[in-house]
Image 1 (tube, each protein chain N blue to C red):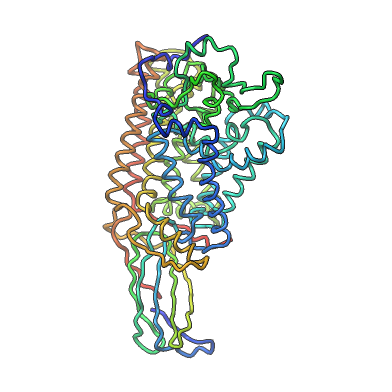
Image 2 (image 1 turned 60 degrees about the horizontal axis):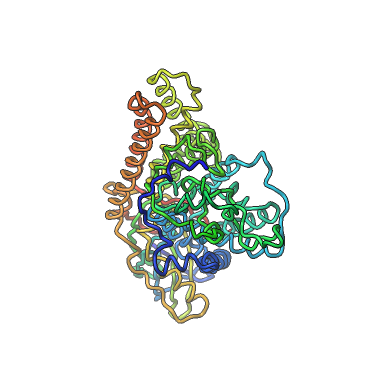
Amino acid sequence: MLRLTDASGKAVTGAHLKLEANMSHPGMTPVFADANEIEPGRYHSTIKLSMAGDWVILVTSTLPDGRKVERQFEIQGVEPAKSEFHSSGPTRTPTE
Amino acid sequence: MVQPELQLNKQPRFDLLRLPLIGSLLHWKHARTLLQIPLFVISVAMILHGLFGPSLAAKNLATTLTWVHFRGALVFALLFAGNFFCLACPFMLVRNFARKSFHPVRNWPRRLRNKWLSVGLFVGMLFVYEWLDLWASPWWTAWLIVAYFAAALLVDALFKHAAFCKFVCPIGQFNFVASTVSPLEVAVRDHDVCNSCQTKDCIRGVRVPEAPLTVIQRGCELALFQPRKVGNLDCTFCLDCVQACPYDNVGIISRLPAAELSATETMRSGIGSLLKRKDLAALTIVFSFGALLNAFGMVSPVYALQSSLARFFGFTSELPGLALIFALLLVCEPVLLIGVAALLTRSFTGRSQPLLSVAVRYSYSLAPIGFGIWLAHYGFHFLTGLYTFIPVAQSALAELGFAITPHWGAPGWPPNVVQLFEFGFITLGLIGSLLVGYSIAVTDDRRRAFVAFIPWAVVSLIIAAAAFWLMTQPMEMRGVALGG
């Protein structure tokens, strides 16, 4: 779940949010996902992280007036899926 | 002249320098420079992108090319050919260019004419890699490349010959040990030609007849006299000897991979007898156990172990826990395994050799399994991330203003397919270590070779079992080091 506000804390509605998840190790393809607005200023996305470890999530918000805002955050220590066998098999982690 | 026993085979052998095109190219006086220039340009691009490009490792040329492509291409070149990365080394391009302006007069200090310093630097590199999460930091990776250029320049500005390559460079030491299992070596084609040679240009260099102190073509800067050179240890494939030989008697010739490791008693030019080289044995041990350690750093159990150590000892930072893991896996484990194996071999054969001599003699048998593990590890990253340099390069060009959209398709081969190759590489390494170990035992004591060999076979099996276990662990790529 992502919350988008302006400088005064007011919810920003009607934005288009794209998520890009990258592993900390090079040689991996990023994982992409879109976020849907489920209530004013609150956006929901589910992203499938393909490997255990540390991930960096880049959120690109295209505002209704066309401006783009980028934010980056980390998800550290994503645990391996129970059935994972050497890097194959997805691990789901909700983003907040 | 005494000929090295491994070079007495006069059967026709494959010689890369006899091939059309490739042979002509490698014979060309400027072949090395030609191969170095592309790697130098790529290195500069990596440094600039690492320092000024995106902080995400997966999107930066410095981290992607260094930790995915360079390492992978390096081990595959060593597996299928030889030490061709030292041949194309970009650090030496800058150093060779600088040597046109300065001419060092000092010799490398006598006390440092061994591998102990480079063993320490090799361990240091492995440690810093884990501690600073180098794979995750374009900034640190860029500075590491800069440091290599600076160190090569500094050392070879102060000291004569190839002091940096022979005594300092950790990548070079890795390549020297790994290339003992390569199928090609720079070697003399016909020893009879060398026997009648009066000038010894391959080591002395080609000199102006009227001014004998003026060298117009270098001989071997690593002190490897071709007729007495055995194998690939300390050979950077620089091809100076090929250029210098007036009889075109040096080739890049096929040989039995890893056979040189069992010739522990043979006197080698520039190296001596492996039996007397505790430093080279230590390098081989660090190479082999370091392969396990480096792979261990990428799987889930290492984080559980770090947490347990932190709780037990009350560590509040990563450094002491990591140092403890290094001490356990790179000192305690090898000392225990090799010590017990040496003790058992001595006991089984009933001979009164010093324990250290037994350990040194048989330690060289661990190089193939070590290389198999490096190959499995680096090969995994290389093959599963094979195509990622394309979108990363596209991103870099887009940052420069080119109208290019990065295309993130499949990163490389599927991990479950690559895993089969990993198992194959480890198995090959194990077979190589068993064969070399037995061969060493036969040379040591033909009558009791089998019993002498058993403890070392068990050591190789333990290392291989650990590697198989590691490769089946869930990979967990930790380390978020953004920027510097």
